[in-house]
Length: 375
Image 1 (cartoon, rainbow, N blue to C red):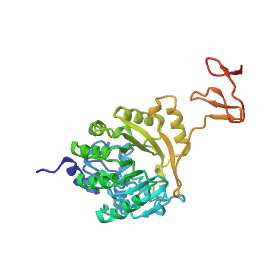
Image 2: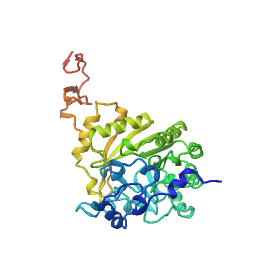
Image 3: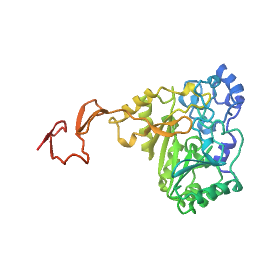
Image 4: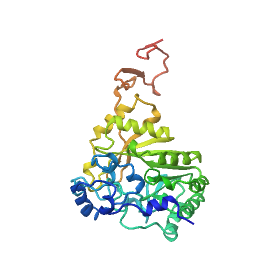
């Protein structure tokens, strides 16, 4: 029996300068970077993803995500080895418990492609390791004992690279824990290796509802025909799909590109979920934008497109503070009696503030909602 197409794609990932040179016209600096930078973080790109990359343009937004750069040697004073402070919250090897009701399992450290801005570059690609059944036992024991945990995110690396049988074993054991209500999988496979999303996998995943899939998309150019079909197959099996996007300089840091991405995601039934400020991982400073850039993008989305296309802009607080939403400030002033705010156009509105001390007052509001008078 021949191996599945996705296995061929994975086995034939490009991992050397020589192999990459057959796909792309490499510049001298790119060749130098591949020779030296990959000692810190390996190179791996699937043939599928490379087929989407501009072979001549070094500024291609997809190319910049996966081809090493000498800028990775530049270390900022603010860079952190573990930018999200996950190691300190690792209660059992492979299990991070930070929030009261949810945990993250690092099931594997293998990815289909190695993104050069990876926040877990201290872990991924260093070896080809997936948690064994024996290594999972203490994780299951911890979860059984902690009944406040209701939500489990399976991450890595990329969990969808596991064989169906291995992944189902994990899902089945988690599903049996009575107080766990929701299972989630974080993945980039539908983008990097969409051939992996086949009927057999989807039928298996469907057995463990409520199961959610959060997919890492960064640019509309990643949404290939194969990726559209993969998302269609997942959605048709009742699996809710969300997107997670990292804000990256020169890749998606413009309102036009980000809005296009959000619209294209909705067309394939993927709900925009998060835009992440790029984490302070070592060697990723050249990817980071000012926070003002993210706020400008959010201002361009809000009101100018559907609320469905507006994700939450967050910073994963350095050192382990968790995800903090960073919002555009629409509030101008606030008192005990009213709040004054502006809308997406900059128009100013007033809304009455009610509290337990004041008596309830009936208000007349004009058709524009701009003025209030007591009856």
